[in-house]
Length: 211
Image (cartoon, rainbow, N blue to C red):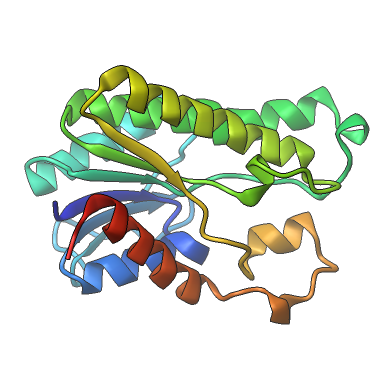
């Protein structure tokens, strides 16, 4: 198992994780809407592609390019997501829910399905959040969107039997998304994306039993 697609690789955990895994011998294709795109020759072991997770055609293009580069792709990490400024559930609008669920559930679901159709023996990892399991004031809508995706991941794992699909929580990080949600949080109390990526990768190797 040595090839991976990582969504949302232009910054934050996605960028840090792409570098960590690329440095450990993985062939990585990472994408986002704002990333600087590389050609067929990677920067080290990391290929980059500009693509929008919300567009079905872009998702298909990402999976096709990965399989063109790698022959097959072993792993998909669903890292990309969106968030909004913290506010209580009843202060949120239907438009808020639609925007978060469009990315955090529908787009991630389509990427997972497209990936597994092209790589039936592949493994999918969802980057989840403690907000999906605990109720924090202001984080309810975001947490609900992550919880739905967690449930879908668990359902796929149960239904497909030998398929590996699971979620990993990287913990709270000092990222742009966290600052959008809560600009008043103590940044010094949050781990860096680089530190979170190292811990995430160790958890990943433990679950996948990779030395």
